[in-house]
Length: 58
Image (tube, rainbow, N blue to C red; front, side, top):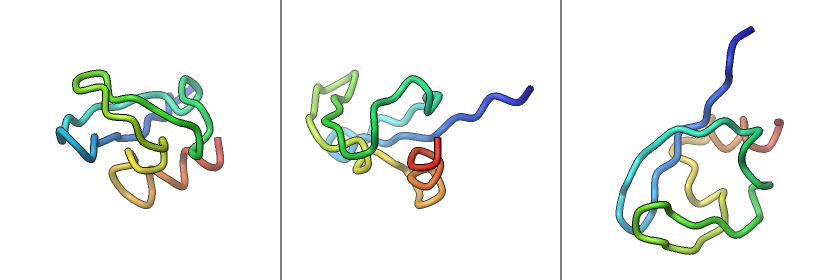
């Protein structure tokens, strides 16, 4: 079984990391950067359109 990950990028501090979409809230939910605590919708942390599509489908 292949594990799916989405790439995230903080729009404030530019920290980048990967998370399993199963461990994330829905894309419209409030999400916090683990480094700078910036508060944005999760969809704003998606690094690419493909990452956003993955979040939306899973």
